[in-house]
Length: 595
Image: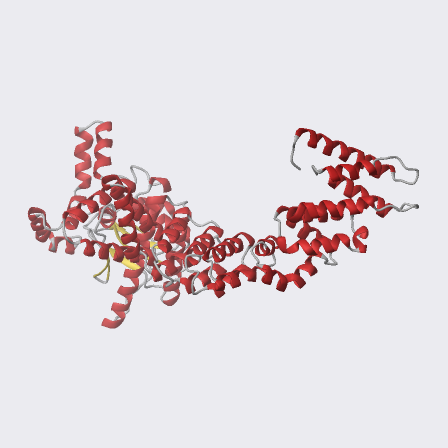
């Protein structure tokens, strides 16, 4: 079937439904059996569920929002896959109330503003639309923007859908348009006219009433333009078609009334859960999370924080069971910076899981998600489930990034069981020094004794950079288990062969666990003398003298004063360093200060 090239409407006699504009549509006139027709209808129905979700998300967040972009990408992928299977099957006819495929409905929106889409397209003359192989995300976005009459995408106040589609020249979007809405042009509308009127009179069908009202919007708008000034029209427009946030607020308030106005709370939660399921399935979890927040806020505003919190727990359990939590996290798996609402939602949903039912999934996701914030939310849940899962959490301490490993380590220690304390020692296998040292601070004597070979290897590593990092970390985080190894290292004959900075760090690390022992050791180093001085020994004595300057001991002061005396065989550097340190100690003793 060919919709026809652009035709000059003024150059031809017009009959009812005369085709004036369109692009070439690929024929789809194959004879279909009932099974194949049903399959195509089902496919188009699912596709329009996704496209409707794209419109809803874009209207709520704007097209450039990451969530709207993800929804569009997901719908575009489904379109591409469907076209690969059948290049001519994605087409639909436009009626006043719905979209159909060969007369069978594939999308019948039942709430504003989406229930206006079919009617407005129909009134603008559009009768059929087809997506063709090669359609791009931008073309799909522009098509949906025309349907929403989105000013942000260039839809002007004087535009109609037919001219907007033509102006955009969407290469892979074909459509058919006629010159006017004519009596009988939509047989379905004619057939259901009495039914619509009856519903209007009886007030039995709010959705149908909305559609009927939409069909008269253009006439009403013209009348309002004549009768009301611009400000009045703006106020009325806001009341008739408010922003999505305002609609959500109204819904939340109505929900609270229904919750306390009857005995159907289980049914309300059930329906809320079913709706949330469709949002999660359509990769629009943030929409459901937004509503949950609005509902919680409405309960808190009406009845206080306690009632709001209790409702949130019940609603979260109904809306986000374990399988939906998995789906939400899966959507965010590869995102380094997911929407903040999604992260909060994951944390809230996990908070509603009262036992360890999600533990295995949480461990699996922890290893695979890109977002640090999502990992943190998973950890908060995992660390509530220590008992019975000590071994799994111990493995995490060994392999997790430093900050997360230390969080798990603290949780294992807080549990206070022998199993959790044993699992905490797995931190000694971490690649992160701060995790190793944090593990060491919690070792008992037996565990420290078992770990001593590994600790000796770290403190005495042949790799100077690693040794220095271990000692520097020990200065910042005192580790009692390291004390005998540090003392052993300072007293060894190889101490003088170490870099000067490392010699000083060893004394400081020893002092962090046992300052009196460190001062006695430093005094011993300072007292070492030989008739023929050596630079290494003099460096060591100067290091010891400078370290002792932080003391407040009379014994240390006497040692420094002795080293500061001039001797013909003494080092001037050592003497001057000892003199400065002695002055510092003496001043501290006079003022009663602490080292």
